Image (cartoon, rainbow, N blue to C red; front, side, top):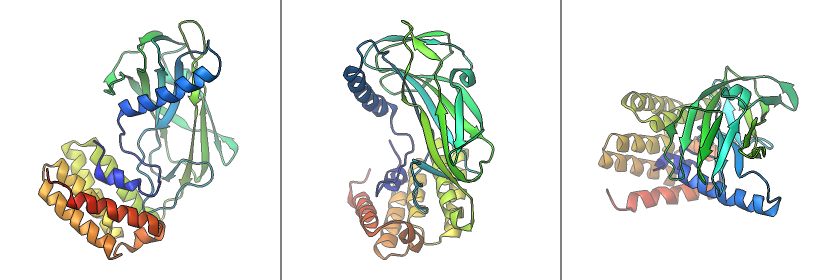
Length: 302
């Protein structure tokens, strides 16, 4: 289940997620791709490639990305991606030209429209069936997928990036068993990098807390607690810090303690105490957020 702080980070339309279930992603993707394939040529491969963000938690104490960027990162934050090949609507064989992801997915990069270079670190291959469970898998040059299953590689950009607007464009050196190339459904990843400053420390701490909460093990929960404290140092009246504390308490099995943090978050929203949040969110967004927290507080206790 998606965490409450992640759900509420999306209020007002910010691009956000922790891990939305892969079952939902595959289902939506399958529907979209099936329509595209049906509307074009009937002999197009049922295999499709897509690049997605691999860990992004929206913008709360920051403005939205500029231009065509879907995401904004600050210098020092890690940019993570998910690269997937899915079989849409039919069983298919994946024929890969290389088992090395760097050779399987060659890419070019621009920064502010000019060619540049970055290093990419790839993880091991995972297989994700239609039910959405991610399982490790040994790669092979030819692999069989059932309808709506996918293969996924995680990747991250290595090293600090200079501020600017980046576009990573991937090529795919793979085909189906009949030699038809894999369809590039979404082959580029566009994001903004901003310089980290004193004004961005609260947002960086919030994202760090969410990342550690998602990881979920005991050490990560301790790291999340530390990040929440860092957020409160930058913004002592942060409503989101209380939402994050609620998630932390739920992860530790303390639902009554979590509800107390929801109440504090609601008070801070109702009384306008989170001045920093009001700098970055419109009145409509703040109202939506407040109503969402009210529903949490008044909902049934579990």
